[in-house]
Amino acid sequence: MENQEQCALSERCVDRSSLVSEDGTNLKSVLCQRCGSKVLCPGMAAFAEKELFLPSMRKKTTITQSEGSMDGDTLTAHWLVDDMYTFENVGFTKDVGRIKYLICADCEIGPIGWHCLDDKKSFYVALERVDHV
Image (cartoon, rainbow, N blue to C red; front, side, top):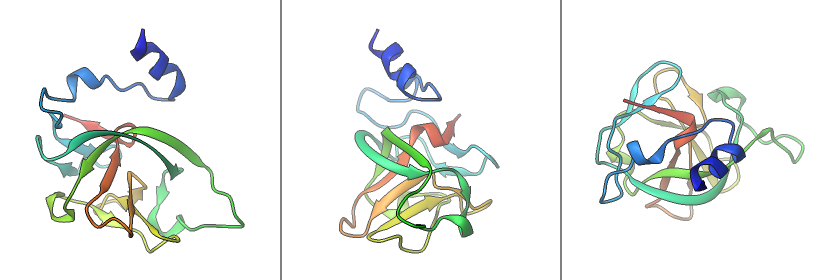
């Protein structure tokens, strides 16, 4: 029942039981939805629930704050990485306030995740914005 409620709230249902290991890490590789480039290897990120706003998916050059509002989604299911060098392939946008958004380094689609400049050890990748293989 809980999973059905979560699916109703998000536009894309993610089955967490097949993605999260018993120790709370990612069971599968995390890939870019657009080009298939590997973002994270299995076991490199912890599952975390945190409410974060991510702008709509676009090419890197269009992710800027305009006139106080942005199209996007508030997402709660994320992979949490504590070191930016853990990623296989990720890029960062220019600062948007105190935030940098994570994008695919190959095709520059994003944002797939979020990083606050105030917290050097927290990089979040939204489960709904990536594929798992």
